[in-house]
Image (cartoon, rainbow, N blue to C red):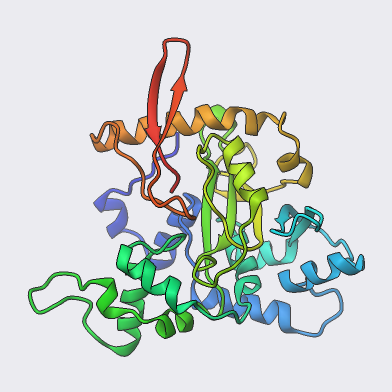
Length: 321
């Protein structure tokens, strides 16, 4: 399998651009200011045949006016069960501009979550008290807030400051007003699934915006072995990536259609529970923390999961990250 650590000699011999590409090839999500500028330039120009933005795609679904250009298929999963689950497109031109390596979906759908909804002050205070920003990373936003103000992220003793003392709801709103995307792994690429992973892309602060629950996303995660089902808030997207292939040696987006998430007999979904258990066991072996649980995400609040593995009755505890 592909090496996921870089030696010091390799690191020293790489340019910043080569390091960035090395990380992208291995699934690390990196969005640069250059990426944002390329995206805006491509989507905001008025030339004929320009790719539609994600907001335009979703808007035209209800009007049945979508013009299906060439692209990589992924799935729109609305929280409102009266709305249809739909196959939409990651525009090919966008992949060519931002790629070809890496998962381009987070960059493309980010603007969909820039919905102008405010952070609920009560929910924000509750999460700060728990030191747990569900579906996101409170420390990350706190550090970003301080960095923008030119402040030190450590206290006078050199320790990291508490998020509750560095982040306000207004600062969080400012940090996420252009959209903030969290990825949730339904199943990760591995040698047992042809190195193909399936992910949910959600609003990172959907809970704090008091968005409605998405029962479809929860049911999908449950079918992939997450019990009890995690909570997701608002509309989400589902996409697939491949980390290795005959034609490409780097991580890239590949097609996923609505039938792939609606049909519970699809092979990837049937195999997902056992593959998630195997992944957690491998992680525990690597870290030496047998039985250690993964961090909580998307409303789980650290609820553990125990899944039976194999005919010998062995089991492994894990929770979603």
